[in-house]
Amino acid sequence: MAFRRQTLAGIAACIGVALAATGCGDSEPEAKDDVWVVPNPTFEPGSSMEKLHEKGRITIGVKVDQPGVGLKEPGADVPEGFDIEMAKIIAGKLGIEPEKIKWVEAIPENREKYLENGTVDLILATYSITPERRKIVGMAGPYYETGQQLLVRNDDSSIKGPSDVDGKRVCSVAGTTSIQRVEDKYGAEPVPDKTYTACVDQLLDGDVDAVTTDGALLLGYAAEKPDDLKVVGDPFSTERYGVGYRKGDTEMCEFLNKTLNRSYRDSTWVDALSKTLWTTTGAVPYPDLDPCPGAENS
Picture 1 (cartoon, rainbow, N blue to C red):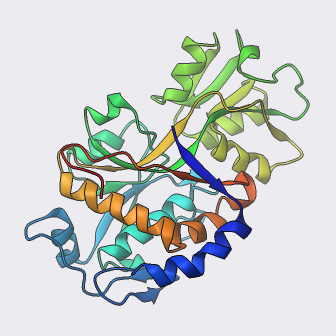
Picture 2: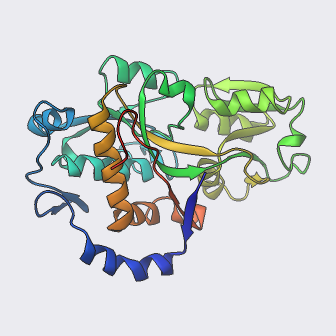
């Protein structure tokens, strides 16, 4: 899987050139809530994008319990995190302001169902692209790459990587590829739970030996409790986050990929990363976008 890595300094040196060389939409964009909103975008008549723009609002499924990616603090009106910022960028290209986004919690058990039955218009919820999921829903991107790792207690030296979880109790969210992988490939005793936060609570209480999911998420939890938790071992998978949409909507896929590609060039993707996940991920990955089914990638 090809992708490019750049440092913050390298990206900053390119931003001026990128902004001078590219536009930001069909019309002059306006800054709303630190997000560029295109006031009068044009879309193919009858397309999903035109319908959403005319409606003036969009429903997006996200995580609400994952630090740095999608987290809704007690008492907060909206969640925060990298996925949230990317969702705002996409909505802005539809001419939809951030306050017109309806945020719906999307957990692994309901993501495909929510897209199929129209509960949400899109999903940005650490949604790893897999062939199995693409049989059910559309997935544009990826817009981020990470890898599966392990979170353990600081006082535990018995687990240094996936080869050490044989027979160990490892928690992850039910229905994810992460929990299936550690069971099938590494012999762990799976302990499924509803959320990653619930898994972390079990780890802190000593009820499980490790928590596993994408490294970006685990680093966020470790950063919250550095005296208690640590991430161990190198990534042992490649997880590619995609934007979920209704299967068969090729025009939506092309719009999403075009929007993601532009966000790489005009610094909005970097801005989203730098104020959410940057402190825990280090180098910045630019994933290559997958072609849309039935059409060439825009």
